[in-house]
Length: 224
Ligand code: DC
Image (tube, rainbow, N blue to C red):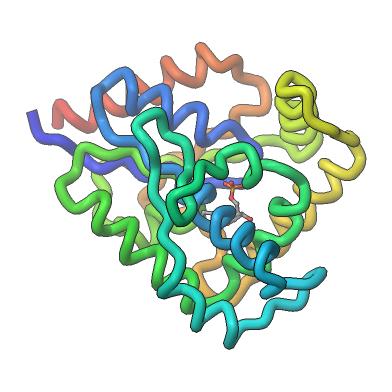
């Protein structure tokens, strides 16, 4: 059977990654979390003082791109220059910086070419913001996921608490709203639903219902 490309785009913290990861595992495809790649670069920028607040040292960051390698381990953890940074990239500091980093065109083109390389043989589920519009405009299955901001904030809060990390609901909600705004209004590759993407609002869906829905879409596309 043909190994297709599945593009999953949508708003932050709406369960895209969990859905995409589950689908990839069920059908034996590679899974790539492109948000983690932008987060890894944001972490690098924080550590090397290339971002302070919302001010990015663009020249310095662009020059540093050649020194940054982002990859994934067997278990899907994000690796930045050989170091497992999976936990570090999920904290609030990186979440607050990453939209500014991902708005830099050179950062995007650097990561987009890496993403195309990872998906060149198909058999991949990739999630992000611009997968169906920019990275793989010819993907056979495109899904655009959204959910109410308050629902997303609650899910993110629960996730951080479960992991034993610090969390404040209002800070998280504010951060989600701010990231939605920055993602939608940035000049390069703003968050947009591709015209041929299927819209999924999962505000009122359980994980199981969502997984069932996406598997049905996957089977439909593979059979056609
Ligand atoms: O999915 P996430 O919240 O981990 O993504 C982190 C940030 O990276 C988010 O602010 C949007 C940005 N991003 C992007 O611009 N393009 C992508 N393909 C993936 C993420």
